[in-house]
Image (cartoon, rainbow, N blue to C red; front, side):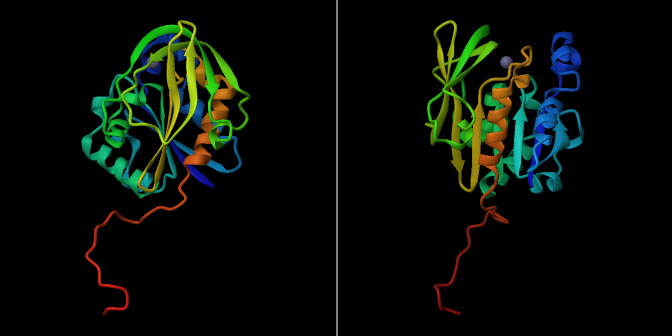
Length: 238
Ligand code: ZN
């Protein structure tokens, strides 16, 4: 079983009626619901409004893939927790950053760049598969459409992705690297752009397929017990 924790800042869904109408119990619950139907995935949720952001050491250590949705409250995630999350990724935990998590502290800590982009609300988007052989693109036929999504435009201040899986094209003509894969030490990271809170994006079957694929791709192959830099004897020496 792949043990997934879906983390959400969980403010918009409680404070804005239009968002609550789309995600009555929160974006995290919607994502957890479709992931939980998979035979090989075991899912729990955590939110910013819980103690320690719902992410105890024990939960982090027992999470294979952490999914992150945040937007307006990135700064409220304690730096100490961000450092722990980064270390778990370096040890081997997988991590999926959704939509406005491009500016979350864990994403910026793992990328080391500004992660800035340009944005404008209210565009149609066509998400193109640019790497049809990639595991995360399986089940997606050439492209899929999102009737209404926030435009995220280039330049996107990220390091060059190890693999680019999707490019988003908007009705306005702008384009964006919408699906980016990274390795950081032992951990796998996927950034996926769709998912503005005011649009029902996480109810779209293709979006759910991508997230399910990404969970399986990001699941740890190897997880180090600790991050150490030891002085060692030569092989054969006592
Ligand atoms: Zn947004």
